[in-house]
Length: 200
Image (cartoon, rainbow, N blue to C red):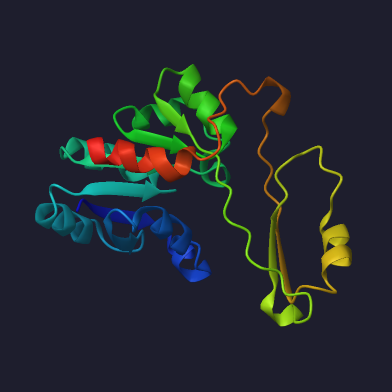
């Protein structure tokens, strides 16, 4: 079974969101997780021990050139809230990686400057909603469309009778949905990431 070293931001550990990325891989790969607050010496020791492993950088794309220079296989997941305002030249560092974008804007930037990028759409299974016991229900809403008429107050007003905890992630992704020519069909993420990484 292929081994993956997932390097992510320490906040992904604190928030528990690292479980999302681990879940994508652990059914078909063994996964070790480290965060960006470890030393480069620690990362160096990892690739000396695991030189045949695949290094997955989740919102840690700045490490890509260094890992590539060591002859390692690198998969990158940049995120819009981390580098959405970076100049196009910033993305040139990802040229020799296997690059996956959840953000359509980042995907388009990479394509425009000649970098191969795979755009992902992710739709998790919807868990059972317990109408009788609101303590079992939490709500995460990503307010990513600039034209959305929904506001945090509206979401709280509508859902607070049924939900114990509400988190509104107010980070908008500035692309024009009407000119979406880069869309990959739904279900891509559940099959193609695994197929691509197996070929690395």
